[in-house]
Image (cartoon, rainbow, N blue to C red):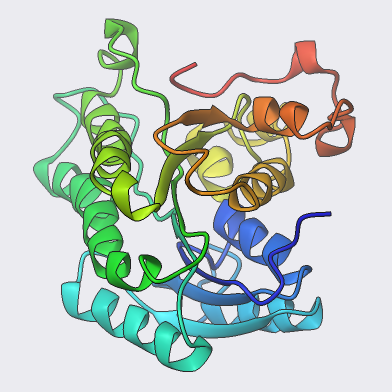
Amino acid sequence: MPSLSGKTLLITGASRGIGRAIALRAARDGANIAVLGKTDVPNPKLSGTIHETVIEIERVGGRGIACACDVRSEEQVQAAVQKTVEVFGGLDVLVNNASAISLTGTLATDMKRFDLMHQVNTRGTFLTSKACIPSLSKSANPHILMLSPPLNLEARWFAPHLAYTLAKFGMSLCVLGLAEELRPQGVAVNALWPRTVIATAAVQNLLGGDSAMARARSPEIVADAAHAIFCKPSRELTGQFLIDEDVLRDAGVTDLSDYSALPNDRLLPDLFL
């Protein structure tokens, strides 16, 4: 089976949810993971810290380092990348997972929240990718993965939450541009998005609470799909907007029932699909 043993991943927003799940999936292969996140100390409103994720990584066979990092800060991002390369000797995979969300209409979106989403989602993705490119270019099989949706210019995805859609599509536009820019260097740049909602804090708090969580899949489906992408030759898979269950089916996984308690026709589709 393809493995990430000995590979080094840098994952933003890895203290919980999808970022944490991707980290643990790679760790089970024996990978090295830099865990980036703002949650350095326990938060009573949110489970998980960067240090707790590192403990879990090492418990399942990987090596981890915790990097307290706000992706809006160029200095903190540069320091995290430098620390990762110094500790592990290089970098093979970047996962741009950190994201801010507010599903509000235009009049209900204050500019502070607008700026936060654009600074974390679009600017943070651009900044972290820029900081990692020099090290990724030295890898034998370098990958950049954005947790962002396929570009879809239908008005129905803009009207209800214009500011959020602009910020998430900014991440996807980074995929479009960086994939072509970095193609000569063999650095793969792709997007991954879930077919259904995923059981995360955002779903619990912002997308429907317990009723939505009951119709969600676990973050492990996205983690397994990401793992399959990272094991592909980077020069053969780039510039793609991938959906988790399609990636797994292409990898030979035919039964997705372990990722949810409900049959497929009762799961809640995610946004932008």
